[in-house]
Length: 347
Image (tube, rainbow, N blue to C red):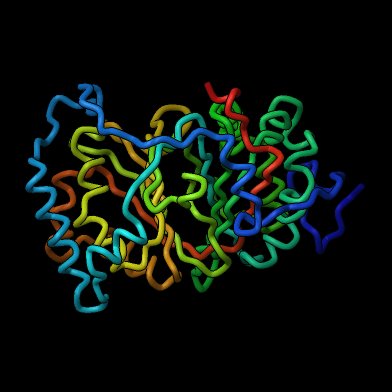
């Protein structure tokens, strides 16, 4: 089958796949399907393996707490704080997300734009080739078949819009999937020739270790809805991740800050900085995905960190190395309950 000029060629396999039913995450029977995957409370580790640099910055937890309050103050002009009780209802608490990886890839769409890219390029893959075994050849195809959650987002730029895709799979599959999104893969030239890819593919792989604001029935993040906002952030941590960063990130002050910013869930994970990622830092690196009610909330929150031009954001470099963040609007969030890992397969 040869794709017509109005339907740009995608992953070889897009044109020949059979359609599979894609179940939106919000509609998936999570009570039954997702509880097979273990979700347990995380406790901060005291292991001395969080920082890879000899010149790491040591900050007290009190200083981190004060910093959280200061961050909240910076938002006070535009955002209304919830009471501690309200914040606790929404985003307090976190669960362990061991055993799965997320592959995150994004690129520019040139003159085609995000809407046409999703309709003619990605949706056929999502609804068919993803689980047909045809995607990317035998080895990669087998790995794609294990993906059980896919989130698609757009950058909302006026021109040459960015699109981002998060593919969640068992850890052993992600190592193969991330290779497919290597910009050196000859396949991506077909996207450039068709006009839906301009510039390089950027990709990194993260291993989630906690979720804040989980669905209480599942321990997993609640599903995104179309139009929700998201921030994708990566950084090297100059403080010990488990010993210092996790307690600060999940503190009561952090709860209030995140709730005031419109964040309803957050997922944090370790970030590989070798062959599986284009992000570089000499420190242990972390990837965070924040979910917001709206794109505008995500854009406002992200801008504060990226510009780092006013207190207390201008002090971020003291604890974070090479911070990179982007705001997105969610196009779709799809889960495939039948591909969720079983409890016994994750031990």
